[in-house]
Amino acid sequence: MTALDRRTLILALGAGLAGCRGAASAPVAKPTTKAGQLIAAARKQVGVTLHYDSAYTSLPFPNGDVPREKGVCTDVVIRAYRDAFGLDLQRLVNEDMRAAFAAYPRKWGLSAPDRNIDHRRVPNLRTWLARHHAELPIPRDGTGWQPGDIFTSAVSGTGTHIGIVSDKPGRASPQIIHNIGGGTREEDALLDWPITGRYRWQV
Image (cartoon, rainbow, N blue to C red; front, side, top):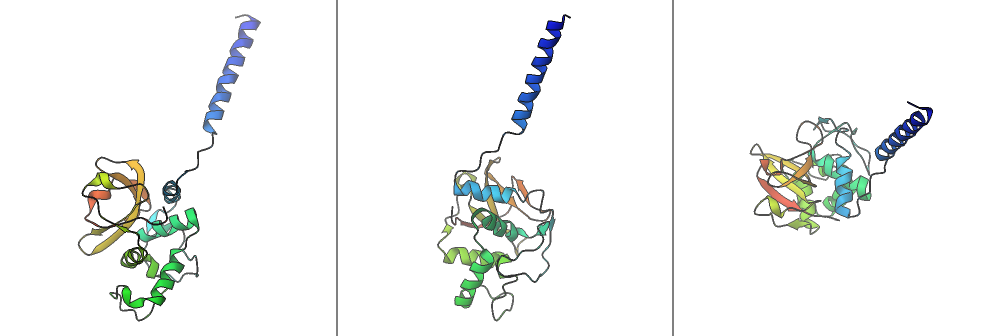
């Protein structure tokens, strides 16, 4: 190989490596829709929230949260709205419960709002969303859901669950971002349990 050939080869390899570096460091486009922003905020919890922990915890107020490595299904929704839009469901639910406590479920035997836990309970979030005109008809099948929808479902008979509908397709419905026991995940599971509600708020 001549000196000229070697120089040409080195320059070509250098250009190729530069191209690889450029592709790897290319910025990820920010979502342009509010639904996309909400989904992106929920998706950022995947790999961060690794555990399901329903223990009662005293929280700061407003914007109180348990450590991000743990949480329950409602925390996925709460954190996504805080991170995407600066909307604090802890404060919003507490304000509405103080104004209309009788409108909320009484299954926990409370005589007054509890700002540590009220917003982290699915029945309370369902009530709050319905009272704020966010409730929509439940689709007949998996094709009627939109990215950014909030779903609620019944798990194991009496259990309740909530999460956010993703923009990634699944087999028969969109994927969801939720925490049902193993941390926050994005997976094809929307139709795994009976759907009890569909909501769309601020998107």
